[in-house]
Image (tube, rainbow, N blue to C red; front, top):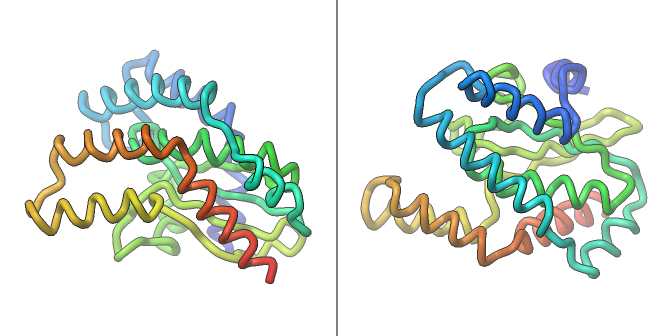
Length: 201
């Protein structure tokens, strides 16, 4: 196992611990991460509401549920996240439900700013984009693959908008949240299930 991965796992949180950590910081008027601002706190508050809703409403499709239950091995999904991250708030409830459903996947979450060494191993286009799901074989501790920071449809939406308008602004951020709302976590499920099936080949 790569040393930064082992270190991160040692300091990682379960889903409920992560949720509590973010909530407790909000009570102190803070967000997770090294940087503190009113904006980040505001995003964290929005995400808290979003995740509470998604925890209640997200459903894993029967087809994906069956594929997850039929995985041969046991895995750890180590997710790099932060409480202020809008994509993480949309995706973590889906990822958590999938792990529970599979029965063979342990979900662990770490904060990006506290795990710089780990983050540097899993950059997207040289950027510290999150969330990132790192797939670890539970028995051997080897890193098998990664997924993130968002499903293809959401990535395309951002890329196309940036190409056309040259910026990432509030308009596209709203469009992205609407995309997630309509998608209902299906793209994330499909992409992660396909990744897991590929890794088993």
